[in-house]
Length: 185
Image 1 (cartoon, helix red, strand yellow):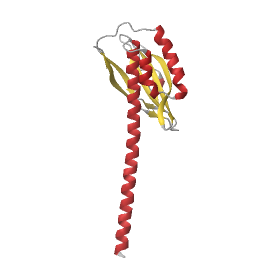
Image 2 (image 1 turned 30 degrees about the vertical axis):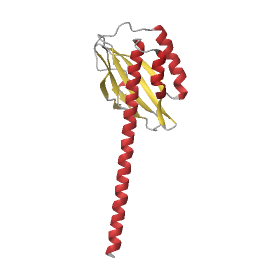
Image 3 (image 1 turned 180 degrees about the horizontal axis):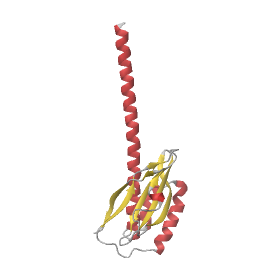
Image 4 (image 1 turned 90 degrees about the vertical axis):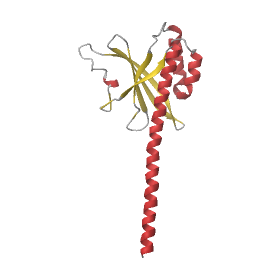
C-alpha cells in the first residue's frame, strides 16, 4: 500500500511540475510577443522619422517595415504614407535625441486585437500628436491592421487633460514609457 501512495504522490508532483512549466512558459511567450510588437512600433516610428527627414528613401522605409503590416492593410498604409512623403518634408531636425511616449501593449477583451499608443510631444506647445497602432493576427502572427493619427490638444488651463482615447484603455490608465527612438548626429 505504501508503494501505491508513493507512486501516486510522484505522479501528482510530476503533473504539477509539468503544468507549472507549461503555464509559466505560456505567460513568457505572451510577454515576448508584446515586447516584439512594441519593438516593431518603435522601429516603424524610427524609420518613419528617417524617411520624413529624407535620411532614407520611401522605398527603404517600405522594405524595413512592410513585414510588420497586415496584408489586408499594407497597400492602403503605404499609399497614404507615400502621398504624405511626397508633399511634406522636415527641413531640419534638431541635433538632440528624439523621444516619444510608447504605451505597453493592450489586448482587447475578446483577444482578437492588440493596441499600442504613441504620443509625440510638440516642443514649445501644450499639444501632442497621438498615433494608435491596432494589431490583428495573420497566420498566427500579430501584424499592424490599422494606424490612427490624432492631434491631442491639451487645454492650457488643465495640462493633465488629454483626449480620453490616449488616457484610458477599458477604464484603466494607459501606461507610457519615454523611449529614445533616434539620435541625430
